[in-house]
Amino acid sequence: MRRNKILEKISLKTIVFILIAVFFLTISVGYSYLKTQVSISGKATILANKESDYPQGDSICDVKLVNEGEQSEPEGYFYQYNVTITNLDEDVTSWEIEFDIPNSIDVISIKSSDASSVIFENGRVYLRAQSLNGYVSKGNSFEIGLQIAVSKQCNLNMDNFTFCGKLVTLNRIS
Amino acid sequence: MSTRKSNKNIILLILLLVIVGMAVGYAALSQTLTISGTANIAAEWKILFTEIEEGTMKGASSKTAPSYTATTATFDVNLLYPGASAQYKITVANQGTVNAFLKSVDGIDTANAASPTDIKYTIDAAPDDKLNSGDTKVYTVTVQWDANSTTIPETKTKTATITLNYEQAE
Picture 1: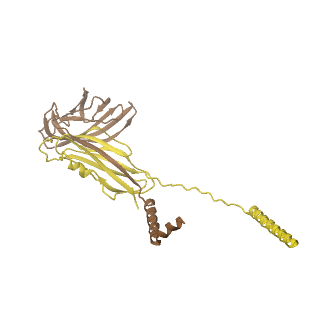
Picture 2 (picture 1 turned 120 degrees about the vertical axis):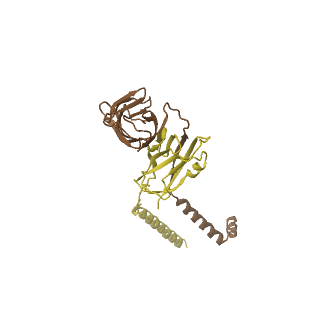
Picture 3 (picture 1 turned 180 degrees about the horizontal axis):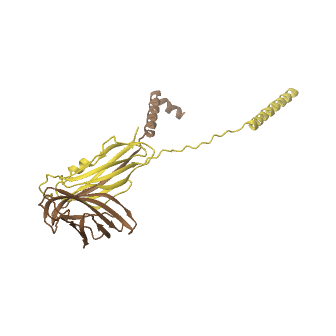
């Protein structure tokens, strides 16, 4: 009796409306796109007034990694670079290139067939020109090859590059 | 009278027995057929980072080696002079079976509006970039110290969180 009274109060229109609403609700719940978010978190710091023992010059040094990989004898990992110097200071008769390698890196060897001597001392690498390739006039560029072998793959953060005693603008190209 | 009544009872009893007999016979002949099936959702939704590495660094050096997880790629870079710039190449892979597309890229405008405004972030990702199942995409994030800066800003560090929003493709 009570149920019949309730049903009598609800009109047919109301029932139809409820049914349609439930129908669309079911469709919307079932019909949803797959989504995902991935984030890139970056931090950049302006390092002003970085102190160096060397005066700033105008020359530019481009360091390009051309090859890397495991080596077996001696066991370790090697990096091969092309180092290009654009001389914007003054004519030089025998170039000198120097740079730092972090002390935390275990260096096995450093070689360059374009240099007459390669010295690695106290975390700094000293490259000296050969007699045939030492002259570089202002405005000209030259390139040398560089091979660095380390005990394990790492981030070789070479820094503090100088050309004939003056700091260069360093570009790492990959 | 009593004979008629007993005849009726007998007929009723016989009919009852017939009905019971039919029910038993019907049950004996009936058999249940069962269809058993299992439905599995074979589709897989899997979008993730698979690599981050340094690109061209001009007057810039990574303070720590860039790293990544499935959902976050991270870098920390020092910029040495106005005009210095650092690039990081980030690989996104669709290792699922559902095609996807880049719905939106968020966070760049917010980051660039924040101080110091001399440091700008850019990314070469664009909405609607497709990333189909099995594909990878390499995006380059560039952070640069404005070459026209003439002063060192008071705030020297700027962070950015760039979000790539992927949705399933139609």
